[in-house]
Amino acid sequence: MASLNGGQPSQIDESMLKSLSEADKRELQQTLGNEMQKARLQESDPFTQKPPAIHNLTDICWKKCVPGAIKSNTLDRTEATCAANCVDRFMDANEAVLGHLQRMQRGG
Image (cartoon, rainbow, N blue to C red; front, side):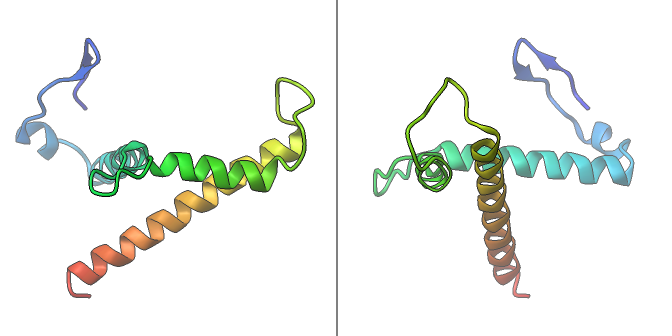
């Protein structure tokens, strides 16, 4: 894969992609999909001016997993586990919806 140069990705040409194994191509595609999903979560909606989805996720998981006052500068084990699971389920649901919409768009 192309190396990063000063924080900017270097140019990837078609010959570089052709030299990747099928497993590497799938891994690259998964990584790019994950990064695009992260970017979508951090973007605000330009039409409605709604805050980024990540703010909604934070609010939902915080209310669900941290019911009382914070007692220290870290979450306790139960709160941390709940928050991690909440984020994972949100990402899983988001991925499932996006996959379904893509299949519908392709006509399948």
